Image 1 (cartoon, one colour):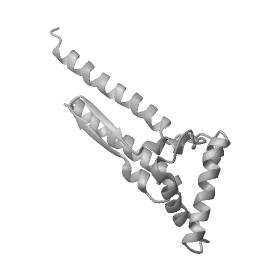
Image 2: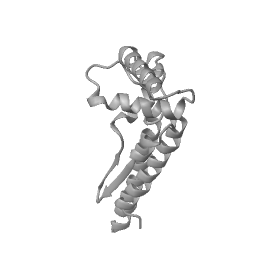
Image 3: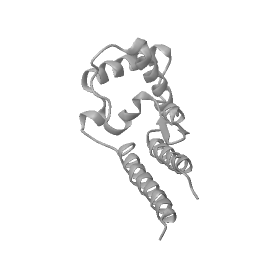
Length: 150
């Protein structure tokens, strides 16, 4: 009979794959997709990913603080290299990245400004919750039924 750990492993694998397939729509460098992984231990499991993954669902709001030690600018440069083919040189790259950084920090990105929402995380997580609840309920129902002395 299937055990809780096997159910968790199966469902977390499916959740991870579902989110990865939805992330491909936004694919640039692949770092977000590669950041996803899951672990199962006994009766618990966890899906881990980059802290910024939720921005794929609702967008990036205007900044409230610093630049996390230049990481945002570096990420923008990497994104520009992948997405924009008209970058002339490093100076041009730096100029474009600084402008984007300023603009996004001030106004948020396009998805956020337009109030858009993509079900990159919420739909797969809702499906996961429903599916795992059903499977574990079924498992315990079978175990209880099998242990009844009628």
